Amino acid sequence: MKYTSNLLKRSNKIGMFFLSALIFCGFATSVNAVAPANDNLADAQTLSGASGAVNGNTVDATRQSGEYSHSFASGTTVYRTVWYQWTATENKPVVFEISSSGFDSSLAVYTGANYPLTWVSTNNDTTGNRPRVEFTATAGTTYKILVGLYNDQNIQGGDFTLQWATNNNPTNDNFANAMNLESVLTGSVAVSNQNATKEQGEPMHVAGNRSVWFTFTNNLPTDYSMTFSTGNSLHTTGTTLSVYTGSSLQSLTPVVKNRNMPSTNRSRVTFLAKTGVTYRIALDEGSNPNEWNAILSWGITTIKDYSDFARDVGGGEIRYDDAADIAVFRPSNGVWYIRNSSTNPFSNDFNAVQFGTSGDTPVQGDYDGDGRTDVAVARNTPNGKVWYILNSFDNTYKVVQFGLTGDKPVTGDYDFDGRVDIAVFRPSNSVWYIWKSSDGGFIVKEFGFSTDIPVSGDFKETPLGTDIAVFRPSNGTWYVLNGANTMFIPFGTAGDKPVVGDYDDDGKSDIGVYRPSNGTWYVFRYNEVQIVQWGLPDDIPMTGDYDNNSNDLYDFAVYRPSEGRWYILRSEENITEIRSFGLSDDIPVSSPALLAQ
Image 1 (cartoon, rainbow, N blue to C red):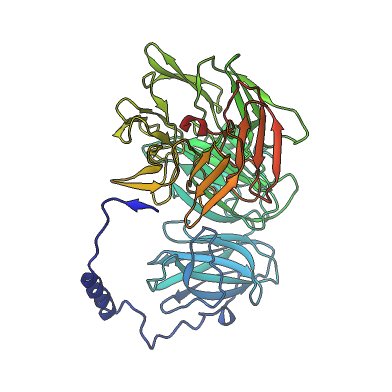
Image 2 (tube, rainbow, N blue to C red; image 1 turned 135 degrees about the vertical axis):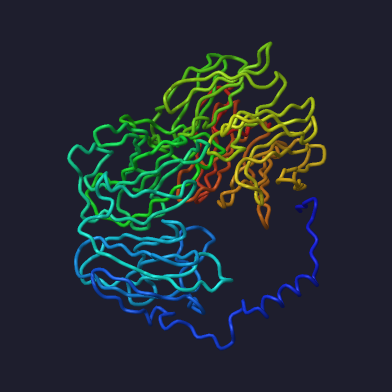
């Protein structure tokens, strides 16, 4: 069903010659290969002492049947694994790290003598390609330590040095000893708060008295929206995250704080990391005193295709919902009415924001990189299209003239910096005009026909970030720009409304259409077409993940103007929600889906 132009041609003869050369040169494992003595869990090499070092090797090591992936990153596996065991003699934090290796190595720590093991900690890259884990050790407990190759089964690895050290407190317990996070755009560290303390003069972050500290500097020439979280921690009983600027405890200025990710007791923060600025990050316990082993991960913020306005609860603390909020814009009075997804189902509470006027087009999105949807409108004027954006981070607003009166807004993160870019599609010449938030530059690209419907999404088999794409009703075909090539996917028919979303929870956008004639959704995933009857001919489909549950699957939702009512079919257990919120002339703004209709 999917076709790609400029198909790559391969020569079978060249391929066979290359494969033969590889085998001849000795890249394949020899028939008489001997695995390391500690290849299997049952043969783990014993380590002793509060600190020490040992040399090891992964060449010809194997994975056992049923062995874990040893990685929290989806679709990744650790290969060529060898095992060690170490018994703690004190209740103190301990650090294990690979101090030298010529390959991309990984570490994982467990307890238990046999499978199933109990996870303690894991890490791939803390310093360069060398992993490091720091975890809470209990006297008398034996820990299984694994070393292997990260996500590459085609190489052998080689020699490495594993070293360990027991400490009275976490190595980054104090502000002055903060761990420097070297990887800028993505990374993770494994840490413990065992025996951590609160220093004199240290501020109250959100809760807790056992903080550990990190520093993070964006040394790239571009600002990026970054998200830090403990969401990959498997057994954490409660964490808080706080981000500051300042060079001492006495001069800290809060940037953002958080104590609870949705449906968990872990934490995450999102902020715009400005180039050249050093941020101080405190990871602390939650409201209930506890010791934990945590994984702190970070990366460029992924823009959501739905509206999540979140809540500012004061003191710099933000409560993220990670779910679509039910919201409408009322042209008659220029007011946005927002029902936060975390609002009690039996409550009628909502927020009202005066911003806009009759005739404005809602163009909400995260323009300032703080992980919250900003209220925004585009207004046609005699001088062109003017954008008005209310920044959620500091409550300031900006006014930008960009586009002509007949242009269609097509907002999205085209430069993948974690912020929404101002962008339009001009039907008169079929040209996309994109103003990049990363460097202020422009993308000007002719793509599509005047009658095409522009759609926004980060589609499968394309680079990260929003893609330039259109749906052509005349032939029921989607066209997606993938670098130098164009993917075209026949899916839909004239009269269908595009409903792009992540319906299979793989982090990429799926193609979908809503057919008003029969009130049915058709979603094209990798190997199947999902068909869901949900809606009436005059309903407005509103894509998004409304249920804030254990998955990020998009739900099926429509707004019925005739009733001012929302009908939502939740992805988890097919639960139905019917919510009265809005009037017949309101514009639903829970997602930008309406821009493509």
